[in-house]
Length: 195
Image 1 (cartoon, rainbow, N blue to C red):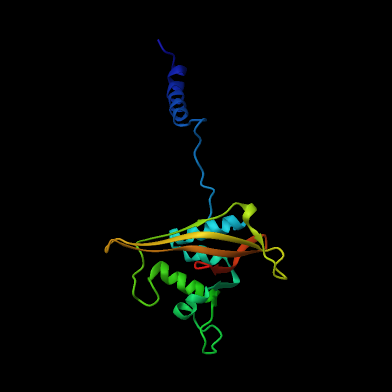
Image 2: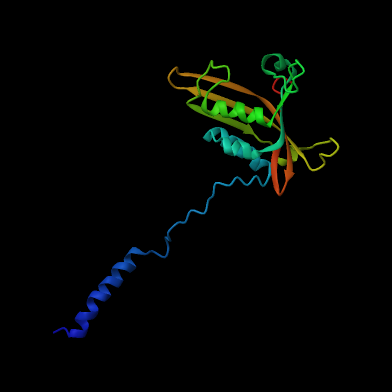
């Protein structure tokens, strides 16, 4: 016969065994320690975040990788086609700054082409062939001693499912990256596609 003390401890023992069976010390619960902060700790990470911003169409990531004095520089053959008059002297310039780049990229992500000829793409991919660090260059310009220049082959694909079409662009971009406050930023994005 089972004693009364054993009967009292049996439910407690069963409850403990049940709880112990739900816990596996070799498979602990995973904790998400990621955050939404873009670190930009290295030039390579900045360029990877550039790809990420396009893939996710995330304008906030895109803005976080650009220096406040950012410049996008066109090749001379494109100035008459897509250049804008930045300094309001009546002549198209071969560059534009941060605000214009954020506007253009935001439109690409959500509105399509700024001239209205293309809807926003269903899929957007930017792929950069980031060369090994040994191929990176120092910026020779005075005051840019801590800058890094990274030439990358790029492929940009905009896919439109309804029309089963795709717009692609490829070429070479030269990124001038500078450090500030223990982070890196793109200071100049130079299109060298036809060079």
